[in-house]
Length: 181
Image (cartoon, rainbow, N blue to C red; front, side, top):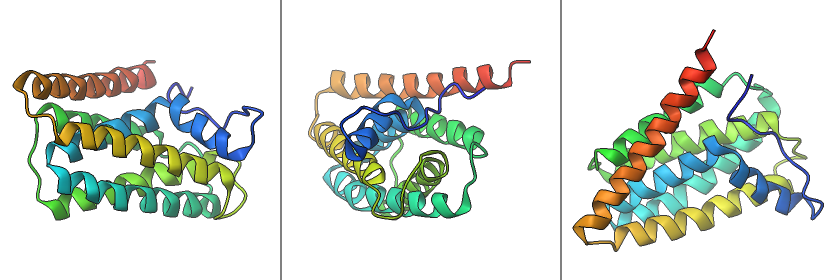
């Protein structure tokens, strides 16, 4: 059973829009992008800019590798643990050095890109589906990290930490459901 991983759906509008829809209806991917965007925004404007460079490129590269490696759903548990950990970092408002944030973003993009490339019916590195996913995550990351980085009110920071705890809670709940016997 694969509760958090949706395969590519057909919207009827073409591959690009199918890729956008895939990101928005796949909770694990969406929660990861939201979590990384919040975490990067908590690091300031430089963190958000770095995320916009590293995450889309690494996701695209992972998607291309995933087509070749065809790992299927073997990364499911790791992916759940990964976005759960990202949610915990947001909830803790963890301060990171820029290079570690870049490494975390790159590994996240590679991991989730591998999952997308392995499970989606992609047609090469210039696949419109993969381009749709990468475009959607770029826009979402830009909007969320920018808004997070300029939020200086204490109640907003607390609210963002609560969102991080919800991301972590969703991951723990999913993990529990996955291992239920």
